[in-house]
Length: 293
Length: 240
Image 1 (tube, rainbow over the protein chains, first blue to last red):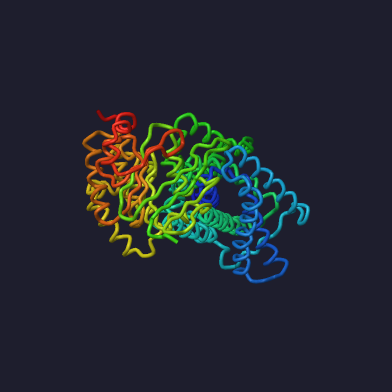
Image 2: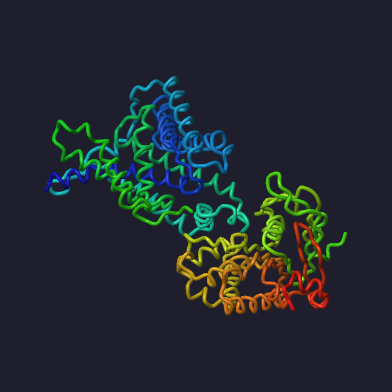
């Protein structure tokens, strides 16, 4: 039992990471039907910005945090302008292909410039160490990550549900043309959504750095697939659904590996695909109500 | 410059892709009127409404709202000038609650107080909506969805309300109720431009009517005068 609880606690960091990436992913998926393969690179660029600022230029940690957010938002907007805006109104497949191109392009560029070697991510001493909960070990960084995710997730949910812009976003997911006739500048809402989505990826970059202690240029690939599956699992365009799904998948994946015999540990990626095909067979619309036409 | 006319459309020609749908349309709406656009299916009535709200751009001709040139403006800019739009088929946001639909409708309102005041007014026009304010719009009946679509277009108190076939697919008793409400709204000072296939209904409440055929206006006048002309009444309005 203790083993199970310990694994559960250990999985909260990975669950938070999945939840954060899924939330950002589902926002643009619901809004313009974009399956954004480049979302992982948005996170990666944020991580690299933080790395450059804290390790190369040796600025304090909070500067690294700000640059992760800024870096992700900047690259997110650049990708939107170059890859997605010219294809406004195009079908899902077209947008997906262009996001693939953006993903490859950015990843290759960064690997060329910075190499794919692991780069140390400096975490303040405050985050290291652990506290004991009876016989269970809880790392301090896990608590930080969990708190960060819950607070930001809560703010995001409030925004989407109760602010005018949040309601306009949900209306646009359903019918952008009619939303426009109500006086909503739909282009501006799209940009705001991309900024929010990229912000979340930037936070995810920080979570990754704090959890693993290192970042690398190919880190984007790992989470994009999970983010996509979690977005669908939670109901496309449903931010709360995506975050719940993110935790379910993150925790589930970790527990899956924890209870596999040692020789089969390489089967870890299989978990999300089992979840995905189960989802498509039994409940394709997702666990919660989607926000798309 | 004659800006006493609320809406003035002159020699307007437009269509979809390469196909011209309406040609050389001259029509106007005076402030405070209920004006109706009649004609059978596919004749171009919705096209004209969609051009007024900015979803379609005029290829030729002019479109003036309160004396101001509107052609080429995007829908959200035209809405901000004081035009409310209730599209054909209702097109309410099914994934949102009744209240959230109205929030989107009231997007242009600057203050929360103004929204609340207008919301109260809209609820007195359509009390059923207040009962169902937390319900998902897609679960409403056809009549309730039509009420929501009208309320959503009205909540900013627009100078001009555009309605595209509000009676379509609704039971007669609901249509009657909605018609009465439209008259009420007009008495409160709102100008209405109504596209309707149900000629009888439209003629009852309108001050002025335009009749279309094959993408052009073929008759216009006050309903009384149009009905007195037997040739028009028989062919276009189906009256005996």
